[in-house]
Length: 276
Ligand SMILES: [Fe+2]
Ligand SMILES: [Fe+2]
Image (cartoon, rainbow, N blue to C red; front, side, top):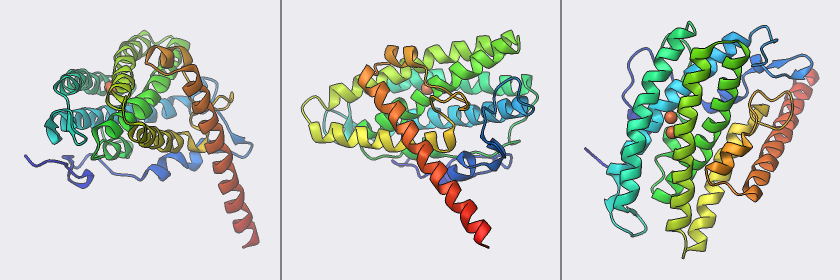
């Protein structure tokens, strides 16, 4: 098997439809004339459809997390060099594959439980693309800290959504996966610190990559501190996963920054449309 597998060659059958990340984060169905609203609030008319869509997004994310962790075991020679991965890191990734394979099964069954089927919604492949980074530290920072950090926030939201709807199956399964994701994010935090202990530039590059990925997923107000944001930052779980309080504050700032930039873009688009 060759090293570094490009995103275009991922194995997917005809049920899967690729969409770009912008199409997901700027989906106009997330807005109403009054502006951004929490589209997962149980009082919102389309909340259950939106929850099914989010569940499908989790399902394809789990497949990509499995593919990414598997690639990290294979793509790098074992060792402590810059483009190598230590054996203990590969063991962590192997354990993660085991967890993600279980999450794929759980997500499939949960989607079925919620009335969806595979392929009903599109698949954006940002997670796997971040997992193609040629530096294992950047890979773990972009995937385990940024995207699986987002999974912590999303699973917490879905668990609470299940509890609010008195759906014990949804609430229990999300809580179960959440526990694994905290471990995966903690692996990312630990390996980032360990592998860059004597290389401040590499640490900076990794944190910049994480910030860029975090910002992408905060666009459109999907994750933020505002009441209207569907997904909020799960601060306590973030702390358990190795985020410092300063890093949590920075993440809040990144979300707010992404939200105002997205607002400005939408204003511009509206003004251009009005000018004809
Ligand atoms: Fe997972
Ligand atoms: Fe994970």
